[in-house]
Image: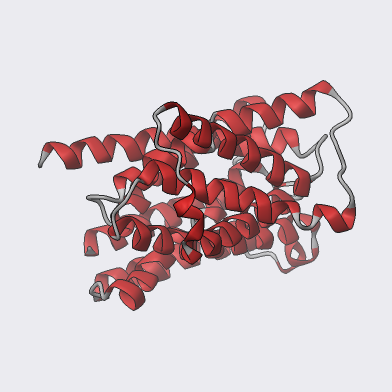
Length: 289
């Protein structure tokens, strides 16, 4: 394996670990911070960090904001985080990590549509297995669960995962065009923050009322936002999103472990079984690639 690919595999694994910490962090934070404000504040801090890196390295140019796709990706990213933050308020952090990562079985379909990747029977089988795993996690085969608030949260974070599948494919398209991937990352975060601020002008600016809320925002903005996104975008230079989707699933394990210890998230048989199906489906899809 070329050294560049080994490097990019390492970048994805590090990104997935950092992203994995964001799920229990978000669950703890939305208890004291409005979900819409959390999206804006987290993205704004990440954008400031990215723009600061660009300025410090004398690579800060505004041309990235002239690219329509950067604004489209910002809108998709904002919608995904709004849905995730609203959903995680109703469901658990570990289930959120599982359901958000359903995009690993959707991305191959989009890669076929936009990049003409081959869709084999093995990939189709993996997608079906992963989708069935989502049904197991969200419904537990119990019709009564469909009426609960947790199911509503599951649906919101599931839709967030679908939205982010389009985001990943769009980011891959931009990376393939070449250019500064650090500027691309900072540009996406900046447009995400700007667009995430729009709803706040209609619902007010619900600022956190205690230090724990601000602490949660600071952590989410400084640690699992700019850095992992930068690492992930950089890895797209040599690795297909179909393959990297499997490696990103490490964040599910990190989120589940941290949620169990810090949030006492229950790991019921349906969550474990459905999660195993999602992971296995992703593995099958990747093998088919």
